Amino acid sequence: MRKKNDLSWTGLKSKADEVSNTTISAEAPSNIAIVKYWGKHGMQLPNNPSVSMTLRHAVTKTHLSLDPSQEHGIRFRFEGKEQPSFLPKLEQFIDRAAEYLPLLKSFHLDISSENTFPHSSGIASSASSMSALSMAILGALSNLKPETEEFKRQHSFLSRLGSGSACRSAFGGWAAWGTTSDTFAVALPEVHAEFQSMKDAILIVSAGEKSVSSTAGHQLMNTHVYAETRYAQARKRTDELVQIIKNGDIEAFVDLCEKEALELHALMMMSDPYFILIKPNTLKIIDTIREFRRETGIPLAFTCDAGPNVHLMYREQDAQKVENFIEDELKGYCENRRVIWDACGDGPVLKFGE
Ligand code: DP6
Image (cartoon, rainbow, N blue to C red):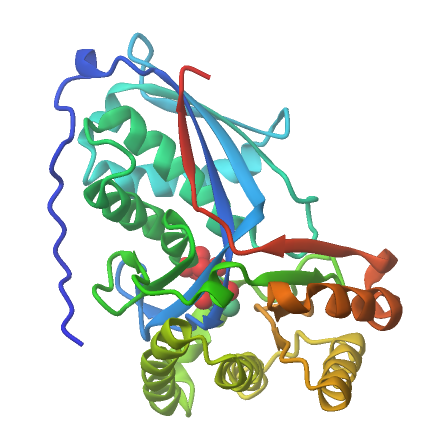
């Protein structure tokens, strides 16, 4: 596949007084990767392509006010409370974004945000939060309509500067990063109906803080003995998954999805230093899922992020049987029996004047 790393920054406002929407809100979803991004270089560039499904209900809402009368600075509140500990990461992101949007430094930025999913539920909030903030910023500083391809590409590019996986949340449905470009993701153009309505039940094995951050995990790939083999595998699986999603080959999906999840955790267990993020109940859930599949023939697939929780992916037509199974046999392995019911979503939304 040919990659273009350049992006044209068309449609941007050039003067502070052109910015009329000084209060703007964005709602952006999290996403679940099937082919995993694990390993990066340079300015947030992936060492291999990845493919994800955008979620519907796990969303960050961000409100941004831009004040040209005050000196540049950032105020940040999360769920109504001042969060000075988040400021260094935000400042770093704003500095990176300002290289492409210099006008950003002409304003004082008041940012407040909240998640629809519970705090420390184990859902990666960096994807939804960086996507929401990037969309609000671009919405204020661009003349382009948010529905345009150019806006979406620029949105994805900016989100990547905050968190790699966030660049895939600029799109509804399914997205790939590292295929067309390493600097922004693209929506998969052909998605079979069964994948458009796919469900994802997130089984919360542990809601606690992860013992290793994704950023530290990515770094360990730089010296990993299997790094090159892994990147080749991910490239091959990306090509396969794009076809699977187009054709609706659910059996092939299950096989690829589970192998990717296990490979991610195998890589962590073989890095130096190694780390183990799955818990005994993660393995019990995996075993129970495989047994259910053997007995019923229903094609459901597990995947995991860099943590102990399990995402269970299944078709809408199997929802009733799978959800009964989760209720009866899997909830007992979850912390406080917690499951977050999600599904394939439509992507982020921008609102002016709110
Ligand atoms: C395992 O996007 O959180 O979820 O770019 O350092 O912010 P940074 O990393 P991040 O890594 C996500 C890793 C993953 C797989 C994936 O989402 O593709």
